[in-house]
Length: 309
Image 1 (cartoon, rainbow, N blue to C red):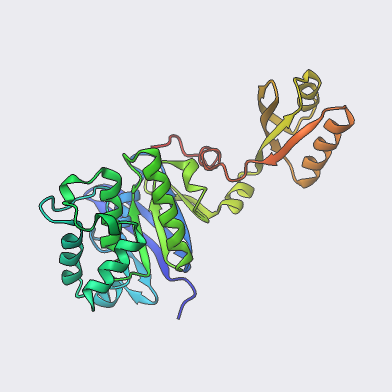
Image 2 (cartoon, one colour; image 1 turned 60 degrees about the vertical axis):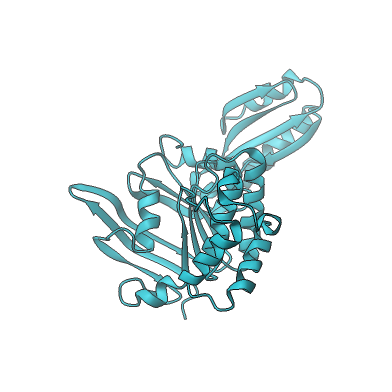
């Protein structure tokens, strides 16, 4: 068995004379949560749909647990679940009726038990008898996620699941994704909420114009950028601190505040250590000093992408 649960190899999708997805390759292991980010029209949704066979591919291979999408479609599709960027539900059905309907369609064994498990996992047990048409968008999103989880897929593809959600609903969704990671599910999630992705993704894939610009762990992408975005905080306003920063050629793009600054730092760990040492020697009372290496928006723009969706 391969170590990667999901393998996408040289995936390409053409629409007439338009290349929507250009030779995308990506691999996820059990427990990976990978954020798929990119500007509008980058090909994120098309990629997710092609992975599950909803878009015809020009060439390339997609495998889950060794099963090929084309050669082993039945085994493959039992292991994958897609949650689209819309949340269609049947308004006239109750929550439990909606899930039971899809449990029948998925031929889930012991439907009642599995529906109860998915209700509990998504914190919807108390809503089991509520008509779907009365639910808020956030609860509908959780319901659709519960439906996607019914056949217990190994790989989940989530297309903009946080779109249109209020802050509380986004927190609830983030907690659910963290729980999925603990269950060794592999999750590929497209989203434009870059700051929130860093909270639960261990990998990121950046797309632009159908191509995968870069991919890897957040730490790997941060190193690939070749510079760090740093944050320094100091006690009270100190103009001398800014003079120290401006005196280093490896410091660029300083954004100053009364109690600190953010800046780009080029170079390795030695440059980091030398700059911090100089600040302290000049009497700057440093209270915080850290890399913003998990700043996905910063990594996104440094990768060459032109806009966030």
